[in-house]
Amino acid sequence: MKPYQAGIRLLPNAVTVLALCLGLSAVNFALAGRFELCIAAAFGAALCDALDGGLARLLDASSRIGQELDSLSDLVSFGVAPALVLYIWALEGTRLGWVVALVFAVCMALRLARFNTLIDDEDQPPFAKEFFVGVPAPAAALTAGLPLYLFLHFGPGWWSSPVAVGLWVLSTAGLMVSRIPTLSLKTARVRPRWIAPLLVLVGLGAAILLTAPFLGMALIAAGYLLLIPYTIYRYAWLSRHPEAWGVPVRERRAVARAARSARRLGLRPPLRRRVAGRASAVARGVAGMGRRRGGEVELEHGPARPSRSLGPLGSDRRLPSRDRRRLGLRRR
Image (cartoon, rainbow, N blue to C red; front, side, top):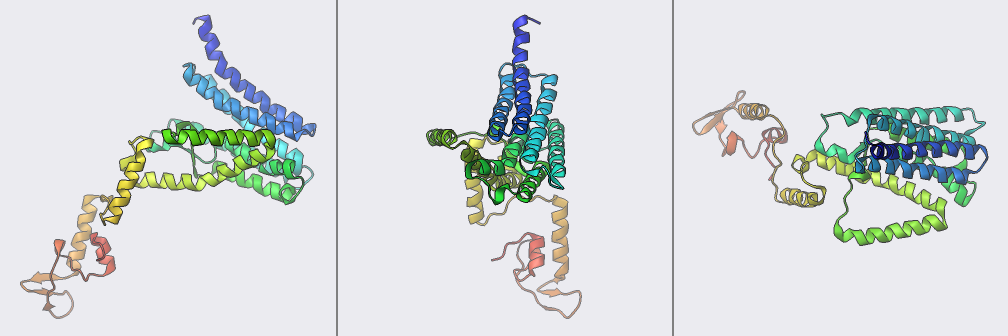
């Protein structure tokens, strides 16, 4: 291997080690009571975590040791360090404070272990790469620190009480190990006409972070949480529309418009059950109406009566709702 190639492969791992050092430095700052420096160190660790993977792909320097080092760095920087910082700040001296810190760190380890196993899972649908399963590690650390941001900006309040902090940390830990889909910013695409407004929002966010950094961090954490319901809706919509799986993200709006137009026109979606299962349902529905003889329908139980006009598949427009659903007919 040439010397410059070894240097290129070293750069992404060096950024990962820097993130690890920043995470441990946050604990040191917490022991000294400098919680504002804790947030700065955690923010720097998140930036390094976002850069190391991109550098590895850009320089074609991905390696197995880099993947393992990245997971270990995430566990320390976004699992152990935030748990210790929050414990030192608000939970130290309480009966269950250390338990809350342990639960957060363990949930982070479980979340990272599941993420590593899902990388090689070939049974997932193609659109699953656009989502994370549960809240990712950097976002969980950012969200868990919301009470600390409010404390540093507004001062003491109900948000800084040990009970509120403990419940919030446990809720964030539950989001990490949950099956809730969350959006992956790595696969996000921006339409050309939205680039200029997005740059204006980025400039506004940078101004807020420079003038009121802790309030800006709190707004970012709250905005991420408000984005989760939309992500759940988007994941469910893609699950119901297999025709959009192979369509680029920028063209899925056309697929959604076509699906809405089909619903307005009363068109039924393609059958999702097996053909044999649908045929069996049709046969049961027709047999339930009796046996057709000439101009009459002789019921299995009871006297014969004049037959009504039979539609396709031998079904009657006066069928009970359950039979109509079984036959796949729409209400008129």
